[in-house]
Length: 207
Ligand SMILES: C[S@@+](CC[C@H](N)C(=O)[O-])C[C@H]1O[C@@H](n2cnc3c(N)ncnc32)[C@H](O)[C@@H]1O
Image (cartoon, protein in one colour):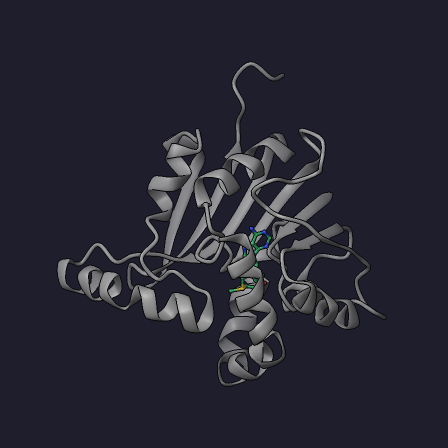
């Protein structure tokens, strides 16, 4: 499963920014919005080709991980000159960081491609400190009956071609990972399909 995901993203790495080009203006606005509240030691999970890097506030100490070495090497080129980033090849489902290593964890379109989002979210919760912030911009399965079914039908195709699951129930997965609804602020960005999740990582028992 992991090997498949890695292969898919290695295969599309060189095309990734070309695909994004027609949407760059819109995506840049979303990227800026997502990362503007990042602070302190920040981890971006599934950093891809590094398109969020230019938008981080200057005081952020940024680490980025990804499963795909080809995506990472493109991000590496972008991180020269501007914001310094510590880039590492690492599986988000099995991170090598200590508990509570980060003040902020960010993801942009990563929870749809990670093979096991429940494990990934549990890992995010673990490496983010108590009271830290988790900022995620993700596309999810629509709650509309017809749109949701169409997404289920098309999912095997999108997964194969672009490595994305378009029918993930991300809010439900966030709850399964142990987050409380009262710590989650969800905003619909496009219909009920693209959502901004801002979570406070309250870990009961850790003061
Ligand atoms: C749709 S791309 C998004 C890239 C980037 N976040 C952006 O803003 O453009 C998803 C990324 O998640 C990475 N990814 C998928 N599964 C992963 C895992 N288990 N661990 C780390 N990265 C993973 C892929 O290699 C890919 O670079």
